[in-house]
Length: 205
Image (cartoon, rainbow, N blue to C red; front, side):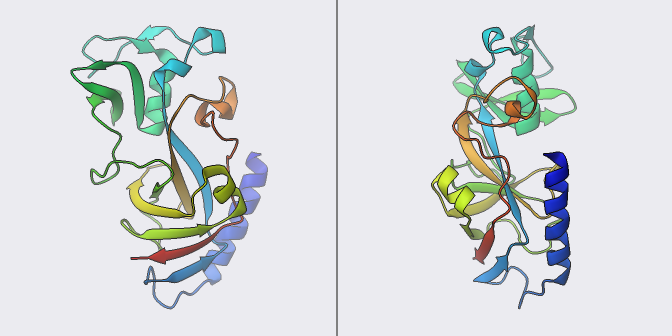
């Protein structure tokens, strides 16, 4: 899968180098087949059980005030940014990754500038994306994306250090992980989508 992804991304990079929009991120600007889409989500603690094959060893970390959570759940929160906990702490139902091996309790999952992440609506891009920017509304035409998420309208309100410059990372919402093996850990249970390369994007203000 990695080799296939790399091949596809190289094809997109070639198209992106040759693509010349009328004006970058202009209203109604169309970007045919130069982006690819992926999924990110808010993992639920309830899905990280030993019965499902996860390392559920009770683990704490700075910022959690001595409270313990399944080891693999904390790793998932580190990757995805936020996680839904089984029992609220001071009215907060989530924990978030703060960097530097530190976590914090949170009221809701939020994006780069504090916007609440909306399932099947919010998306993240790289800060190195030279075509799109924060707070654009995107119309994404893709059979894979449209069938798997049920949505073709997205709002850019998040970013991620690991997001590729040609990647649009779509927020799925809360879910348990597909499984405990390999890439299944980073995939929500409600979809099998991992990549979509058949993507046409129209950017609107």
